[in-house]
Amino acid sequence: MNLHEYQSKTLFATFGIPVPRSGRRQCRPGRGRRARARRRSLRCEGPGPRGRARQGGRRRSRRQRPGGREAASRLIGSRLVTKQTGADGLPIGQILIEQPTAISRELYLSLLVDRGARRVLIMASPAGGMDIEEVAATTPERIFAVHVDPAAGLQPYQCRRLGFGLGLTAEQLKPFQKILFGLYRLFTECDASLVEINPWSSRRAAG
Image (tube, rainbow, N blue to C red; front, side, top):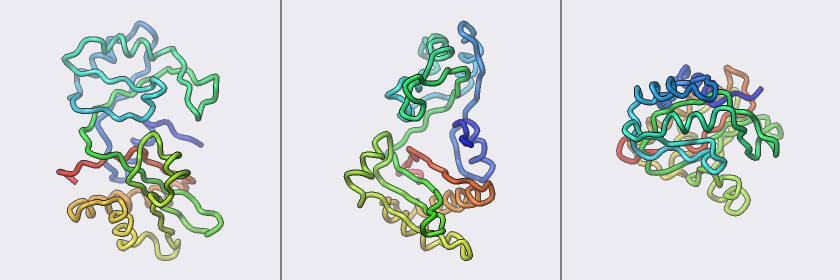
């Protein structure tokens, strides 16, 4: 079972993983007023995440800038075509309005089942973003991985190893460890097969 982004973020928050403020709206074409009202209730500033930007699935709109209703109306009822949907794409019936986050870097983080090793595999890369597949194919040395023994569970030294590979500062290692432990709990308690954050946004100053 695949989860929608808003469902995943709700689950993340349940396990103490920080997510941006957001609100989901189900609209029909021509009913953008509610979406615009929701947009005004969020403090929108700074660069937005890129994610599905190439396919037109993300639109950025500031509170003081007109066009939020028009952007929502263009999305609702259209079809989004990505590598995951196939050539026919999928219809857009809902939109997720989210507060953008000012970031300094885009990192990659995922947990999956390595059936050959019979372990949970945690992978991280300082080259996160839309081109992570190309990174894996051309510069695999930029992807760092650890296997978690199911009997011992995730260990702090494994978090530090991944954090150092990502180039995190000493101040960033503690919150990074908290995020990893939350993700590992989510992965095991929900019996997941894949948990992926791409991009995972890093802010140098705040850690």
